[in-house]
Image (cartoon, rainbow, N blue to C red; front, side, top):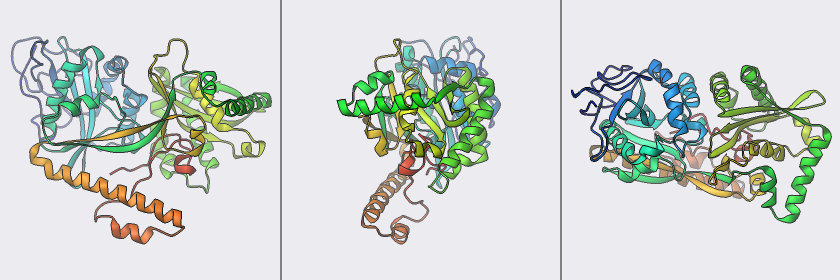
Length: 453
């Protein structure tokens, strides 16, 4: 197996977009010779040698698809947002050429064992952040379950080289995520902060979820579902070839539903629509997503996008005909029943039905468990000052958000004071959680804001 120093991600010796010399091309096999090659590092003692590489080109990213999805299936902590289809599509819509950094670890024979998909940003100093941006509810690395300990060591070493020129800022890390292994073994400056609050239910059919509720609440939910069925609201799962048109209908219905009520403009943008069409079509083919359309008297009245992985699934975006409110139809109950259909007898015991980010009132009716995402900051000693700045900015934004809540509670306008209390060069506190109803208004079921510091 080839061994040698890990390739640096920012300022490395390989041309941007090129695979390091001696490294396997995506989908290929690592060299088996005894020589050294740029882009490889020795594996941990007592194990087979592992090699580490940084892929920077869009073509290489695309070529990794099959290997990526195979690793995705072998990583028990993976959420739908770590699928190749989601992240590659995001890169095509939102990525900046020349800033792609996909840290990869391979085993003997070239088998892909770990991935950390990152992109380089400037704030104004260099920061490496996960692919997926603010429209992604959970960010993480991928580790092969059978090689998690060894692969995490090698991936951490490679990320240490990447961190020579940039702070690593991992946002929206779910508790128990693979990235926590990297954080735990990091040798340089590191900080763990809190991030968005999510709500989760057990991964179970809707009958089991209703059974968890108090008796009267459960009776009301069953009555609402029976009413929808009696009206004749029929569900249709959209096949792969119909996904592009269905996504267009979903976004149009979503915009009409929330017109004049604070819709996130990013969800109506061309790039977001293009991203969803590409990602969801590929994810549908792989069983990682499902678009469901609900019709009443032949008319489309609800459209729902659910993202799926073996241990976590959740509704991401929906649209509902405003006229349903006049007919007292409980759209949220219909949507949750649809998302829960993925779970059955073969579901892992630790599976979760995520309501994604946000704590809207309707979610509490289902008695979910609050789960707080984490923000993991990693740096080399030379970049400790930059890490400190990011921590200070996060504290300032949290303070500003708390102040806004106090001002809103008093019925006063926070605009002037927010501007004076926010450090120069930072943005006002960003909205958290865009679940169904998003921040109490916008019904995105996930997806967050378009921008994130």
